[in-house]
Length: 164
Image 1 (cartoon, rainbow, N blue to C red):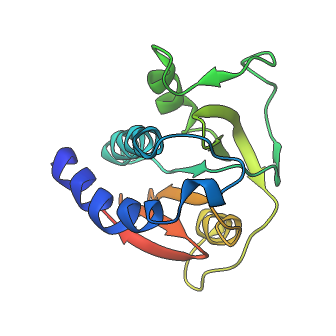
Image 2: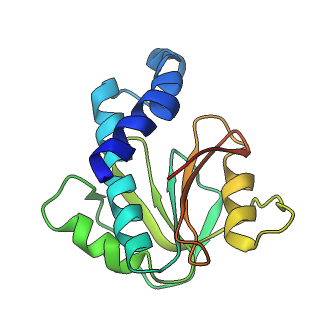
């Protein structure tokens, strides 16, 4: 099920985004496949979280518009999403209040992050408002896991673009 869901996301969400030339995105010097790997890993974390009937929010992109709610577990080191064991750690940290922020190089910039830019989404709570608000900035994606309905939603450009 996860593989077919990931294939749908690649086709309908990631594909159109990757049609924007990477060189026009100044902070990103990655190959398309690296960005797809980051998004795939984040969707796997989101699916695992939803299966546990928990909520969470993952931000992918080069944003600095957040403050952290918890002390730095990584003690100032840059931790890559691709390092062994990091995915398992993030599966636990996502259950904390706040978002996980991962830049476009796969570096975990924060967990328990409070996102300053929020835009209310009628009928939904603060996670949805944060996902909508932060993605108003170009090149930022949010993967939201709703604990109410156990759905995974992808936001981009201030709107929901996909749901698993």
